[in-house]
Figure (cartoon, rainbow, N blue to C red):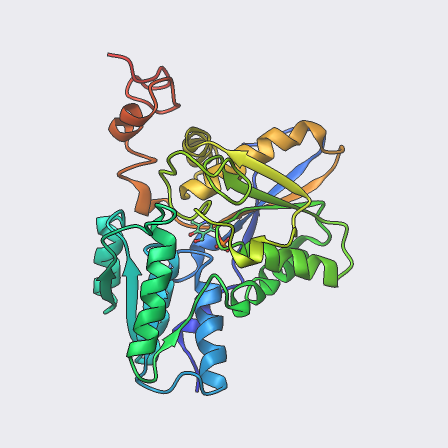
Length: 329
Ligand SMILES: Cc1ncc(COP(=O)(O)O)c(C=O)c1O
């Protein structure tokens, strides 16, 4: 079977950021434009691989139901893959899911299943959503739970991400990316080790995440951080751990948009902020690759809305109501 649309996943461009990190002691910074995958994010890679592998070994039959707990990019990527293959997708979401993501999922034919209450033990929605996905899989004959948190095909799909970076620019000293399931950066780390590269893996997490952060506080943005330490994050695969605030993610995004013309989502803004922080400690001439995980268009009501930014961050944020001056008045 030829998966026509799915063959467009991957091989994303790696472009030099010439303005944002210009003239920093010969340091070269490249951005891997994962937002140019057809579903708009790096999650197209694991979505395709998890489905293709299950298809190949018979865990998934034509017309079957796929179940996943995701309200963001994984859900959208799976919805795209399932539509292309004639599979039914049930996305388990929670009440915080952005309305426009639900609209995209419905447009792609996915069924939405809302978990109304968080897990009583942790107060987190993630365990409650995972429990619901497991229950659906048990109840629906022949269904397949992709289980992005535990499915090894998630991180395996990112072996290629790292290989593509090496193919494009050769050995890089740093690869930086945001973590949530940890699939992206665990896959990049595995490939770097397989190739015997000295590349340092930089894992970027939210300050409020349980993976590398304090594990408490509000996480306003999806895609970076988690309320639990996911299985792929339990074995240390990173060389540098950086936590960033929501505010830093917004600033990073807005800088990226204004100086490089790249409209990316908040996890990418966090990666920009993290690399900026690490830059003084990098050797002269270092080569860095940043993963830009998704497109900015899905964040027009948050990251790129001056009103939203002013409501959530009282101090100055570039691009606030008063131009560069901030939000007062
Ligand atoms: C926008 C965005 N950035 C980063 C990540 C982190 O990727 P991973 O789950 O592979 O750690 C995700 C995952 O959902 C994401 O949606």
